[in-house]
Amino acid sequence: FSACIKGEQDEARAAAFAGDRQSYSCEYQLRRDDTDGHWVEERGGWIGAGANRRLISVIRSIESRKRREEQLSWLAVNDELTGHLNRTHLRKTLDAKLAEMISGGRSGAYLMVGIDDIGAVNSDFGFEAADRVIAEVGLRLASVLGPDDRIGRVAGTKFGIIIVDTDPDHMRQICVRLMNVVRESVIETKGGAVAASVCLGAVSL
Image 1 (cartoon, one colour):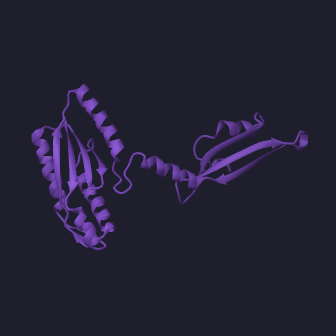
Image 2 (cartoon, one colour):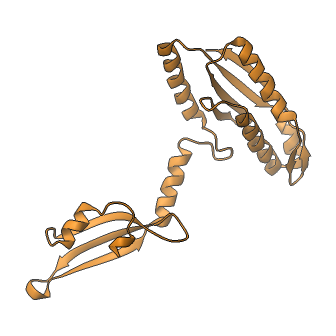
Image 3 (cartoon, helix red, strand yellow):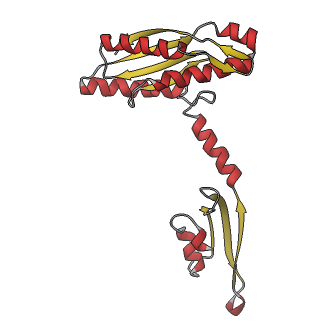
């Protein structure tokens, strides 16, 4: 059974199995062929004395709890609809990037991008279609960014974008690419095709 445990064996568990510890409690993942692993909790302790001494252990699945914890941890950083950074974490990232630029003598830009007329999409196609448009616009905006740039959803229909190592001329080129990538093709929703566009503002950092 121990061979099915992913990673190093818990020290308290090993000590208990060796008879050097009265009780133990630990969490670990079991290897499975169909998934990355399955989280379990194991608790055990010694009972009896002499020849009747036995180590009794109970193992229970905590996979659902671990998945909830991972989801909550992810949501603390990311926006649920788009998968991009949420407003709070984008602001923290902006503070960090500004500090890096100041210390390294580098320049950059901060862009605010808003989706046009999303209210009309809500009324004509429904809220589900509007969410689809917001998510797709976020994907398209991210597709033209560099590996060190960052994007986050800062409001219902607005995205903030941090661009590093850019000057005003390059910043204007990026703005044009961002507008073009959104409107280059319609966005398919369950309610029909939506032609989306964005407006944006930018400031040099």
